Structures are given as structure tokens and as C-alpha cells.
Length: 603
Figure 1 (cartoon, one colour):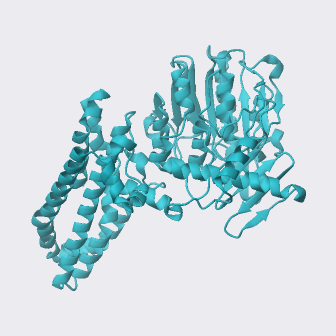
Figure 2 (cartoon, rainbow, N blue to C red; figure 1 turned 90 degrees about the horizontal axis):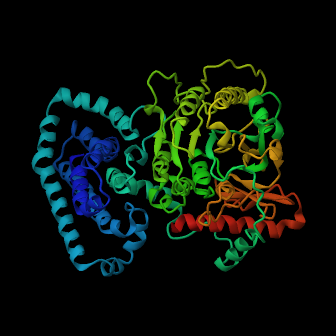
Figure 3 (spheres, rainbow, N blue to C red; figure 1 turned 90 degrees about the vertical axis):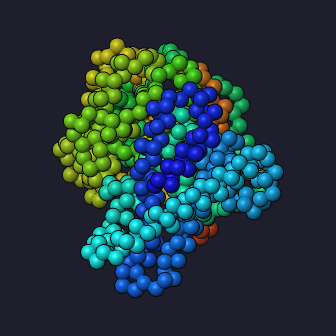
């Protein structure tokens, strides 16, 4: 851990000019060494697994060659980490990201790396690499290793070491005993990306990047046709003859409150075909807003939903773009567009944003204020996953009055996620295997009712557009097949007095996705959205109608006149609704997945 921080300090000194140009306070720079501790400790525990095994063997049998094996392993780690760290120094000025899996591709062409680097900088980096690797190895051999041998000769210490160290290593590499294992989000703390990058452990980040992309090094596994054909299909399906957007708002600069509902399926909503009585408050809200009744989540996990909602980027198989900072920094952001237009911004979540690396992605979006579980008052009641929805909603409702208008505030709910430990009666006695889920939804719906009852008394309410949408769907009491379109359908509701009176209580039947929110919302507030090229305007009557969703190894593709789901592994299609449309629909869906995954890889 000392070695990690030495390389971190050298990185900061190497890029001190960026620190000065960005006018970053010294106290914020020092925060790097605080916020890096947990991830450094986790990385250290991973590294220590092999030495532990060696020392455990040496407690009963200790030939000399095991000592050399330990030193060789230490040398590999020290030299390897030194190489990663100096390589990152070399690429950061150009890439503005940490070292990623892409370095493996570049290693096959070392001449290109050498030729692209300035000669002076190249030799300086070589010197830094040799210096820190040599110093690290010397310190290990002369100081740390002798102390290790001394401790190993103590019998009681050896017994305790063998019995307790495995448990400590496991807890350490997970980052603690919490449900969600540690990831890069743990080290994110600043609006200055260079500080976050410095705080994230180099080896941990590179490992995650390689692991997430292991299956598709150097190639897109979802290439079904040549690039020109895929581009032509994409251009065709996104073709919009004109902009005849239905303007639904009374003002083009409303406050905006985005309520992201954890795991809300369309089957929870009576107006979307669900059973009555699960979400009665939502039904009341729909009578005063515009309900979109053909919306689908593009993914099945929360981190995928965040990238879809804020970045307009569809989910895809294998991985998620939010777990890789080098990729998500290239996405557009609704938050950034709104902030440039003068909006103040805030994000609220009662749990741990570390899940799926959401925290680092939310920080990248540039919210003025971010509140997660540990930031709320300690007196707030909470369950196993975090603070219950009624309290986070109530906290945000109080906060909104103090925000500079216009504001954009987003809240991610929590209580409709297992283990369903909400502090509320469970009146729904049906639902079989999903009874707990629908009762959790009943609770969160009740919380929405309380939130809006209070919000309606506030002076900012009449000028506020409320958007209620799910991050992804969930299995319901109907137990749809996970590949079916019914499984992926979610609610989307625009609500508020800011909506024109003649349009309140209406339904929009446009077929689309949650990542269409960017183009739809920004057009209503008269802000540009060209960078959100996967997002289409749902309130433009002539915009195309289709929906996409990803599966573990394939996709679902929905058109008004037919749909299918495809699994690449067995090369199998499900649910053809019209065999005569097979070729055209199949090629559209495959071109879409090929293009999305190709952009993910190339980011």
C-alpha cells in the first residue's frame, strides 16, 4: 500500500500542471490518499493470496527455493505495477483515462507506442519506471521480507496466521462485509477527473477492464453483416422525415424531477395491463399526466439503466459501459446539457452507489450535489440495503425548495429490491413467488403518494415536470420468460401542472425505450440533443417506432408489426409474431446490436 501511494504521488507530480490549470485546492488533492485506501487494501489482499499460500506451506516445510519463489513473485508484482503506473503516466495526457484492456492490443505494436511519444517524455518515463521498480524491490528485500521471516519463526503467530488470515483476505478483497463487493466507485470523490483517476488503484482498474472485455479482445462478437450494411440499416430505422414534435409543456424551462423506480415492471401498473391495486397512487398520477404505454428497458441491471437514462446509451450483452470509466466518459450527459442551460442539479439514493460502479458514473455526470446512504442523517430508518423510500423522497422534497431554479433533481428508489424489508404492512396476499415484490411496490407507490401530496403545497410545484421511469424490469407474478418482451416492459410517466391541461390524462402509444428519454425531454425544453444518437423523440409523431433490449448473449427487437428475441450462442430465435417479416426484422435487430456493441468496444 505504501508502494501504491508512492506511484500515486509521482503521478500527481508528473501532472502538476493540470492540477494548477484546473485550480484544484491542495486539500482536495490530499483527498486522493484518503479515498484510495479501501481499494488499495482490496488490491493488496488479492496480491497477497499467493504469498499466504507459500508461507502456510513454509510453516511445516521450508526448502530454500520457496524463499526465492516468494521474492520472484514480489518482483513480478512490483515491476508489473511500476510498468502499469508509468504507462498510465505516458497515456494520460492523450487519453485522459486510466490504462485499460486496450493496452494489450497496443503491446503487439511497440514501435507505434515509441514513435507516438515525445523523445524526452519517453526517456523520463523509462527512468521513472526503473527508479520506482528498483526502489520497490530493494525496499521489499531489505526491509519487509526480513521482518516477514522473523515473524514466521514465531509458532503462535504462525498458527494464528494460518487460521485467521484467509478470512481477513476474503473480507479485505471484497472491501468489507457489505453485500456489494468493492469497485472503482469507492475511490471516486471529486468533480476533477484527474483526482478520481489518481485515487483508483491502477492494477485493480486494469484487471476489471481486462475481465470485462476478455471475451471480445480485438473483435466484436456480434458482427452479423458488413459495416456498410449495418450503417445503412441504422440510418434507415432512425430516419425521421421532419420534426413535428407535440409540445406538451407550458414553459420551456421547467424544473425537472426524475424518479427512477428500482425494478418496476409494467405488470405493477394497472393502466399497462397489470392487476389493479398494486400501485393505486401511480394510477392517480397517470390521470394528471402523459403515460407512455409501450416502453421497454434495454437492460436488466441498474447500472445499465443509468447509462440509458442519463447517457442515452442502450444496454448490451457481456458487460456494462458504466463499469469502465475510460468508456463512459465519452458518453453525452443529460445533466451536462441541462447545467449548461443554467440548471442546478442533484442526485439522491438511499443505498450504496458503489453497485455496478454507478457512483463513478454519477460523479462523471457532474451533479452539483450527490447524496447516497452515508450522506443522509444517521437518524433516518433504514433496512439491509439502505434508507427506505419514504425517507429519501421526503428528504429530497425538503431539499428542492432550497435549490436554485430551474433545477434538475434525480432520485433512485430502493425499496423494490430484495430483501423487501420496507417498514410497512404487506396487504397484498396474492402473487405467489412474487408476493414480496408486489408488496414492496405497493409500499413505494404509497411513498410516491405522500411525496406528491407534500410537493403540491410547495411554490415550485406548478413549474415542475415530474418523470417516473424504471431502471429495468423484474420478474412479476405472471412469470414471463426473461427473453420475452413482456418481461422487459416498464412504466414511463410525465406528470405535473406544467403539462398543458388538454394533454393531462392522455396516453402516448409510441413504441420506444428508456434511452429515448434524452431526445424526448431535451426537445421539450428546447435544448439540443444531437450527441444522443441512439435516442429518438417519443413526442414527435413521425419519429420511428421500435424498441430494443439486450439479453445475456443476444437481443430482443420489437416493431409494431412483429418482434423476436435472438440468442447468439445456440443461434436460436424466439417468438416470431409474423414469419413473413422474419428477414427484415431480424436484420434490423442484429444491425442494432452490432452497432451498439461496436461503439461500446471502440469507446
